[in-house]
Length: 253
Image 1 (cartoon, rainbow, N blue to C red):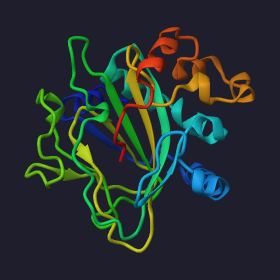
Image 2 (cartoon, rainbow, N blue to C red; image 1 turned 45 degrees about the vertical axis):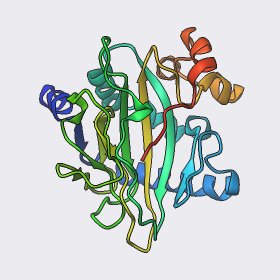
Image 3 (cartoon, rainbow, N blue to C red; image 1 turned 120 degrees about the vertical axis):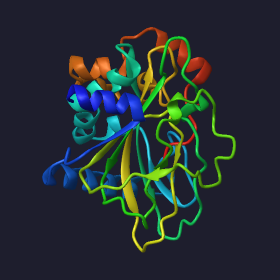
């Protein structure tokens, strides 16, 4: 990331980076998520949540090298540090597809229901577009600058006069301070709108999906030192935090 991109992310609360995934990696991710949806069937997303009107997958770091590559992408880690400071960790990597006919607005919210505190920002999210995000297929809506408001949205189910929608092409990535008010929109098309969500938290917050418990031994054995750092596998705080708050992070679009 350039210095200007980091400033823009910090000031307006989001940044859309074009063409992060090339055609080959994009297809690999699409095929991998498609196989997992078929394999897991009714259990898909069960490590985190199921959602009416959407397809879900969770615990994706444990399910393929293409996902490990995503959560260790240098741009993503730079962005997480720009928002959270040096004490950050992956909270979860999930898949969400807004299905055709889903007509409701997801309420505006801040991830984990958190506001910035005396230590600074606590939540950062990234949305990896596996399909184009168009006005009709359920793109994410957000209120720029609201991460600086110091309050949670009071009527999140209604449209906000200052909201915008994040539009882009398959391969693009949205980086966001997820204290910024945001939520999903209705998919009025005939096809799913697919995305991956790489969600990070500050080191003193619980992971949405406690990696030590979820990752298989063979996955852990093959992780690089960088991925162990990303997943906070050697951070003893997680053992305590997981007992009091893992999985509480609420909506993810």
